[in-house]
Image (cartoon, rainbow, N blue to C red; front, side, top):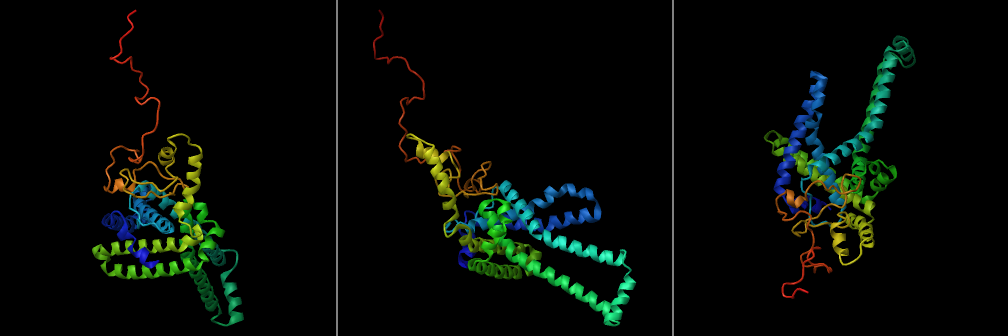
Length: 365
């Protein structure tokens, strides 16, 4: 599992491009987002209008990690890590990933808000703090109020720490459930998420991912000022999300590669509604989500079976092989195998009716 996740990026179509662009996106995310947040809080609320520009790099990075997790779930995929292309899809996936994290952290935020309101009511509310402190002091001694405050703070800190630890373990499982289907509701389904998080394979993958992140950030910290550390951090997160996907694959697919499991029903449906000599060709070009597709030149580059749009493939952007410059399409949409025999037809000239052949004599009479 660890070897496959570490070497996945070396097997992608454009390793250098993924590392360079991924490092640049990570650097922009670490720079622009804090600056934008500081501007909103301390300069002017009007700075909030720059959110699309400031948050775009972070969303692209999040979306790519969703794609890496999905590739890890697709067991047996020889293509390695996916290319960092189709940014429109990455932004959509990144936004859904952020919504998923916010939903998982919402109970903690609500609990801290309730605790803060209770403390504010105790200090400035109808209850007199002096009388309360006097009662506690008379019951526990002179240091009673300080001891009660320390115990309360320690209890809150312990609860927050336990919640964040549980979040760190459960959130990748929820992310894998979302990546497998492309639907946020699957990542928030307790039954699905617990089913993933409770497996030993996921626990192993999560532990290895934690180690990979620790090593990656340890290497990144000293070299961060010269930007090289940002690339190390990006690579560590790619390896970690690959491990998350591989760890969750068994629970989400039942041991069946995700692409095969999702393509079989659609391929069957496409075959039943197509008749005649063009059945195989219609199944190849009419239902782009039925089987793993190939590049325009038949180079074998795969297109994910699912996307961030509720499991439906995104058709508005060219394939990854085209975007990275590995393939130059001659005719867009022509994915027909050139070895296929031509279809039989009664009108081989496209419907144009010619007159009588010149060799035939015309009837003058």
